[in-house]
Image 1 (cartoon, rainbow, N blue to C red):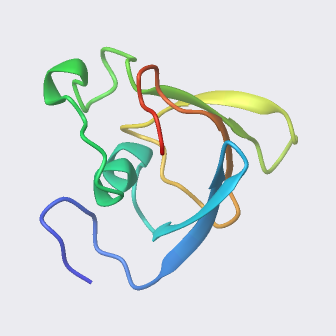
Image 2: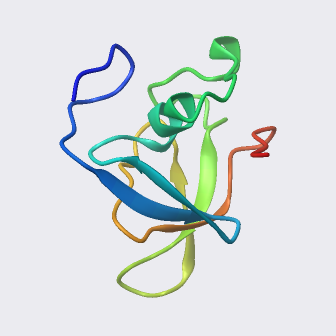
Length: 93
């Protein structure tokens, strides 16, 4: 599918954020997926290139099972990803 905001994707994947499941586009970063979910993201708060670290979030690693930190502007989401903490100030209803 095509979108001005998203990277190209063919299907939706299921991720879990704070215990709730969401179907989101594959091949996209957390920030792009949050835009897809129609969340208002303040562009001035995020640099979108990893310099500011304002988009840091925590997820469960597939390899170790431990909670790790990543940047929402760089980390592509994967099937069955479990996100434990969104970037500061981002709230899902």
